[in-house]
Image (cartoon, rainbow, N blue to C red):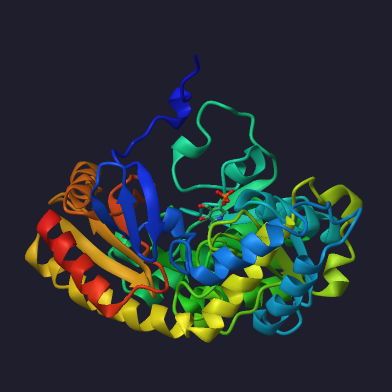
Length: 412
Ligand code: PLP
């Protein structure tokens, strides 16, 4: 008899029986309002009928045909559909299975294209759990403790975390850009630096929107030094922030865009997009994996992009996000333990602090557990684990947001 590895041991008492839209129905007979969406994945809601149908149909046609050997129609169609939403100029798409794999593909491409070794990441960034992706992650020591040595050539610059520094946003941006300039003088010269890698909204790092002025500053420095700008849209992409891509809150455009989670409503697929000129500097034979761009996942991806467009889900994310933050922001003045309520679209973080301003992970964990007892699923994040995050499906209704606010308030 075997049992689940201790590494998979449940931190949650919830076992799902079935799920629909914003709701998880547990084997305990309880209904849970799901504001976790499988960590930002089931963007069209659980089991959207059009996604289910597309996958079901594809399973009966062809499940798997490794795309460097035999191409399949869903991947070609998904590439066309992505072309309608990708920033102009990013006309070449490469597929993998997970966010971490896509991040690694982007870093490999950046190094091959520039011939430079170093990658600059930003404090609190989360880019995955494989060895290379964990090496690029600075959202907490738990992601890389105990399995050093990590990948070489990674340099960390500060993130403009205005709340933590106790500064206004512009002061934090000016500071972080000055520190980056210093890093480019002191620890990794521009001619050794292949790329900047950053998320438009820090995810596991605490649900911190990257200030638009900071992304613009990175773009300007990237252009000046021939460094590539890699935007990790794994969590913030596909409509979640109220724009199709998280970076579209600024004017900065990426050289390589990385997407995954919300792309196929729960089927594992990820992608990087770049210009054909840049993508051609990679080495396709060495990049692809056995399962990358799976046919069923690609079919689900096509249906997901159609649903996002046809149901106006990007606009819904914006409106429902405003409703959610509007409902929870008053908690900041009401409870001393709530230092900050922030977010962009349907990525909302509530940061818990002690009286001296230091991170209060205990209260965050207690509130997160209380939400489950009140029938609302939430998660914690942040390097210190002191942020409760809410990530509803993009199909969430106004009534469900009201209910979520009510249940969260009851939990606090
Ligand atoms: N990048 C970001 C911004 C993420 O949020 C995640 C996952 O949470 C990843 C990369 C890694 O994705 P995966 O867990 O699919 O490997």
